[in-house]
Structure formats: C-alpha cells, structure tokens
Image 1 (cartoon, rainbow, N blue to C red):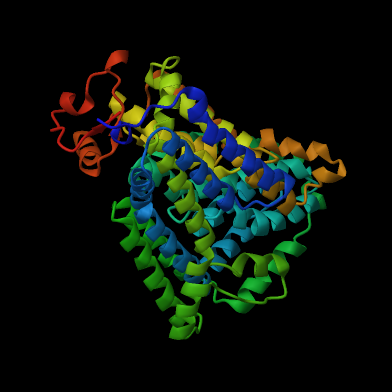
Image 2: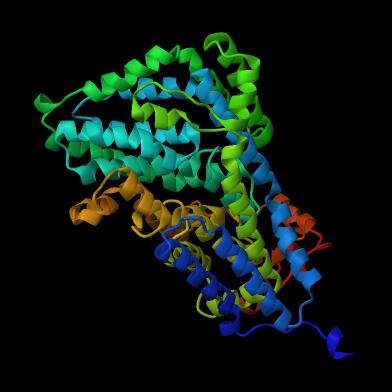
Length: 510
C-alpha cells in the first residue's frame, strides 16, 4: 500500500487539543480584545485549523468535508424550527399574543410578591418569545426600574429577572439554544424539553420560595410607585386589543407540544392562527402579516421599554443565529472526523468510567467552555458532539446529555461576567459594574434558578434518578442515522445494540 493510501493516524492529546485551544484563543481575541460578541469568524478559523490538523494526520479533504456536512445535515431540522420561530415571534406580537402576556403579567404585580412575580413574568415572556436576552433587555429593564421604586436592592431584582428569563429560554420550543441542544445530541426537541423538567421545576420552585420569602421581609409596600407599570400597560392598551382570547396561539402550541406533535407543523400552526388573529382582532392586512413573518414587527408607542421589546421577530432576525449554528456544528463535525474528539474523550474516559462521572463531566465541560470561550452556543455544541458517542456506548439516552449541556451552557452563561450572556445582562440591566458598583455582581449567586439546576442534575446522575437509558427505538435511530457509538467494552460496558436486540447494520463505532 502506498503512503498516500495509508489510513489516517490518530492524533495525540496535544495535537487533538491544538484546534480547540487555538480556536478558543481566537475567540478570546474577538470577544475580549475587540469587544465583538460575534463568534462566527473565529469558529470558521477553527474549522480551517481543524482541517489542517486532519490533513497532517493523513485525512483527505473530501473526508473532512463529509464529516462537516454530516453534522450540519443533522442540524437541519433545528434550522427549520429556527426559521419558523422567526415567523412566530413577529406574528405573535402583531396578533396581540405577546402584548397580552406582558399586560397580564404586569397587572398582577404587588410590592410583597414583586421578586417572585418578576421571575414568573420574565419566565412567561421568555417562554413565549424564546429569547432570554430580549426579555432581560426589555421587560427585565422595566422591572429594574419598578424594583428601584419598591426600594429593593438592584442585585435582588437582577437575580429574579435572570432566573426567570433564562428558565424560559431553556424550555421554550422557540429558543435557539433549546433547539441547538437536541440538534447536536441527536434528540427530539419536545422530548428534550420534557426531560429537563426534573431539574428545571425544582430549581424554579426553590427560587420562587426564596424570592417570596425575601419579598415579605425586604419590601416596604408604603414606598412603592406604579407609574412605570401604568405607562407600560397604558401603551399596550392604546396600541393593541388586549384580551385573554389573544393567548389562543400560545395555548395551541403548548397543546400540540403536550400531544407530542412534530415541532415544525406545531409551531407553524401557531404562525397561521396568530396571523388570522392579527387580521381579525388587530386590524392588520394580509400583506402586513407576511411582512411581520419575514422582517419582524415594528411599532412606536412612545414608551421605550415597549418599543424595544416589540420591534423584533421575523425570519431575517434568525439568520445570525442560524449561521452561527451551522458554523459551530461544522467545527464540531471536523473535530469529530479528524479524531480529535475521540482522543480527548479517551483521555477523559481514563479518569471517568461511570455514568455519574460522564454526566458531571459533560456539565463541567459546558461550564468550562462558557468560562474560557465566553460563548453559550459553543458551550452547547462542542460538548454535545464530544460526549454523545460515550452516552451511546454506555446505553444511556442522549437526552441526559442534552440536559447537561443546556444546564452548563444556557443557564451558566449569564452568571459569567465576561461571557456574552453575562456581559449582556450587566449592560442591559444597567448594573454599573464598570463604574465600581461591584456589589451588583451579587446577582450571580441570587439567580437561584440558574445555578441550582446543574447541582440538581449532578445529584440525579449520582443517584440514578431521572437518568433514562436508551430505548430500543432510540438505538435503532442511532443505527439508521449512522451515529457514532463509542466502544466501551474495555470499561465493562456491553455493546448496547446487541444487548437491546437491535441489529447493528449501519452502526458506526469508534
């Protein structure tokens, strides 16, 4: 056999880490030196570096390219959902669905329950919009002003806002990160959301109990002012017909999700119903609805908080996220095809041999990527591709992994000040850390729902609670999709397909 036909070599640990470390360095340059929170080009450079490492190892470019496009192909359903999400946000604002949610949320506020209500309101708005950043920068900012009127310390209000906003982002079928996590781990969107409930619900209840207790001991109801609330609700009533009927599109999508209907038709049904309601209840024309679905909604109410919240949505608004998802997944695909991920996993597996260890390592790797790279998307995509073959080799559902990377990626992002999420929170909520108000960083431990969920996740991993094994149907899907299954026979794990009686035709192992 000639040298040109020789099989590619496996990289050593330092060569395997080279594209990862260099990519993180370029990301750091972009994020921290240039102050530009757009990781697209650094990730594209990382893909190129990985390609060069692959060529050095003896891979041919068509093979590397095939690995890149295989992973991108796996993400296409998620991209389709993101496109539909863009439509639904623009149309739901025009239909009055989002304005009604905001209106009813604001009208329930009272001084004693402000922190708890603020968390719930942000959770509802973020759940309906699928964006934690949009919620923090609009409703969250308004709540900061209301909290100041109540005499509540800034960091307590910020903690409640972040807890609610990122909870909604984590479990919303409209969220980009909620779609990204199942895309990179090969799981179903609604199954992923359902599997996050065992950690999400207790974390939210713990946070709710703390905020309620603090509210009744911290707030002086006699010093409150409702002027900002009245300005916002008045602007909503002046520009939209506010009614419980407007909640029908959101309730329809929730109903279809509970019935486990496919995500894309379910979400598009919400677009159609929202469009009909925009025409019949809000006076929009059909062409207007088309414009809202494509380019987003636009309005000027004279109230800055409302204008910044409602001027959004549309297919075009999702293109930034879609392009980032495609590049990040392509980078992960190149790392996988060149064997870099396998080498890194092998080193980890020499230290970690149990499911609890792997689950904890997946959460920790997502947090570490958030700390080093400053990017929540990469903290989901990279560990998701890295650990998925190990979960399959152990016979565990990759739903465990999708939950782990969401908790270490989405939820920890706003708690790291130099992360894109943390930097946005500090800026959007005007926490003034740059001016020396470092006490406002106390919002980090006070965002209880964010950091308690990963802790609960580790507890489940150790005890085996809510840690599902892969079903025969899921294993058959691995086989049919050609997903990589890590051979862990040396660690005492049997072939999961053989153990479940699933024919191994088409199986790819590593």
